[in-house]
Image (cartoon, rainbow, N blue to C red):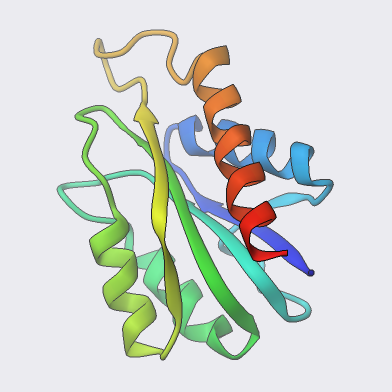
Length: 138
């Protein structure tokens, strides 16, 4: 199974999660500005919550790479604990793509909130999520 990890981040929180997932799965985590060079049976796609939704760059990545994406697994961070999965499902659905029902979201540092997050426990949670999702698809 071919796996890819892509993320969008402004603060670096989601990048930390992406790198933990990529490291555990033996793939390089890259920003959504990097297109998929080949088909990904499973794409781990990370995005934080910005103004109640996900960044437009994430939707643009899905659209421009839709012919190379099998299934999407969503992860990310949020100061509020909110999720981006509905927005990502909407963007994926427009392109005929499936999104895993499970996601991984943890608290992320924002201004004075959630200092030190994502922490080691959050990174371990992201790795456990990635192992469970990728193992279920094998």
